[in-house]
Image (cartoon, rainbow, N blue to C red; front, side, top):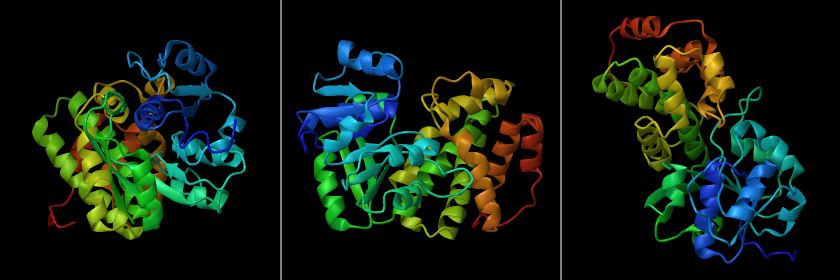
Amino acid sequence: MSAGRYPVGIIGGGAWGTALAAVMAQIHDDVLLWAREEDVVRSINASHENALFLPGTVLSRKIEATADLARMAGCEAFMIVTPAQHVRAILSALPDTQAPLILCAKGIEANTQMLVSDVAAQVRPDNPLAVLSGPTFAHEVAAGKPTAITLATANPTLGAALMRSIATPSFRPYWSDDVVGAEIGGAVKNVLAIACGVVDGAGLGLNARAALIARGFAEMQRYGLARGAKAETLAGLSGLGDLVLTCSSENSRNFSLGRSLGQGHAAENLLADRKTIAEGAFTAPVLLQSATDLYVEMPIVSAVCALLAGTITVDAVVTELLARPLKSESW
């Protein structure tokens, strides 16, 4: 493979990585997607469909899949779409290159409490970094439905170049210089989506869901500002926008997980049985510890952690949250 043959390489063959490959195929002649699963590679190359993670979506013949990470060496930029907890290992194994990395994973690394961009800067200090985050369901993006998303990088020249390389008439990136804010919105909303799913599964009503979204957003703001995020970023596509989407639909893996919890299913069984990863389940305990270290109060996140750990029932969680002291709405 000649260097530069692929303008953008996709690292990760799940639903979101496949959807991004579909977007890139609209504007580039050749798209290379790396997937860990050999059956995903075979399905995409032979049938032009990711039957495992995005069934029913016909993919462009411009998309080629591979399980050989070394083949990605000639890509001019990378979209890193593996789960947050695997980003360090993937970046360490990526071929030697100084191509820009567009980080599409949403989460906080366990043990280190590092954002994905911090992990990337540590592992790949010579690669320019950007974060892609916002309200996106993979099947809608792959189908070409209108989507707006945040592309965050501290380098405006890089941001402009990357936007030109990934934008389509139906996939519209907005540049931001607030990498921290874009990442925190994407990480925190996953945990809050689990909480909203619990509300739905327990039949607590739409009033309760709306209240939880609003109070959850307050928690996102408190935590984000404590870590250096900008308020306007948290109120934008990668924060509030993504929060509203994932807290309102069973198409969200995190919402679906919470809904099952609300219906009384055990978290241990639900997490063991899932084909796709509900990132919020891994992020929740890390987020809570980070918030505790920063003296930031996040009662909804704390409740989700307790439910995932199986140390409290849904009824008890609701009682505890409703029994909290009356206070100003400001924070």
